[in-house]
Image 1 (cartoon, rainbow, N blue to C red):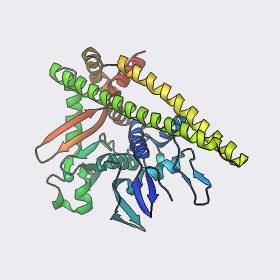
Image 2 (cartoon, rainbow, N blue to C red):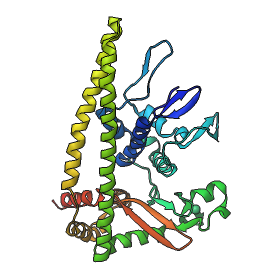
Image 3 (tube, helix red, strand yellow):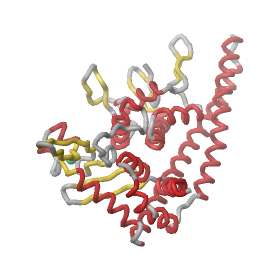
Image 4 (spheres, protein in one colour):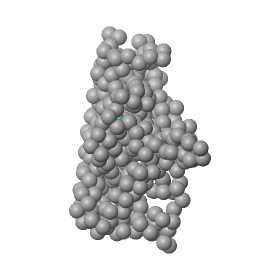
Length: 345
Ligand SMILES: [Zn+2]
């Protein structure tokens, strides 16, 4: 079955650049929205559909609005990283991947983390604060939460996925005690509120992420403009169809797509303007993080996990050099400020 991002030419998969860019954005959108349903809503709002193709007999197929199922199928399709699945095995394909393996991996670990809940409500019985956030920097893979029991005591750890899958010897620092690294991360966030240098770096990081958001919107605009151009050409072709039923349905199809594309283009301009007005300041960061400390103490472990997930995109653990680094979500700090105001009000 034809797949968004590729066309089939003489039984070979050939990259369709316009669709490929769309596929990459779908992966990014899932990371932005953190769960399937809001991503589906956004895709439908944009009028993005599953692969559209024409059978040899000239019938139009596909082009359906995304559902949770079809989105899930897309996000887990290994074709996008240049592989093919045959029964239960995965092999190297002859085609070119169109999604960076790192992006693909991040999406897989988020899907895994969300499990069957399909959303943020992660079952987190042992209060693992960094569940789904922590990664082994050496192996570039997710670390999962696990524990061993000795008598009545439970010892919690985060374990590198590579070490788990391929053996302990494959990673220079396969595990880290959970309590220790959780305390360290929380301590780092507390420090940020007090240290002007760290605040400046955080602001810098957030700005860079906003720049990336801007670049993504611009690239989406380019895709849409190209699509609009193609669709205007398609309108002229459709108008010459002799079969009137075909002509009417084809014209309606293309006009509908044009209408959605144009609406989305207007939105993109609006989003870009908003982004320009939303630059975050040192003062805001200082303010948000200064309040972090008293808030943190009052939260139950489950809420603490939620706050961390809101604030931080990921924690990179480099066991080889004993380093830990935090990446903040672009909107995390702003959201935290809002929540703080609500909890005070
Ligand atoms: Zn590792």
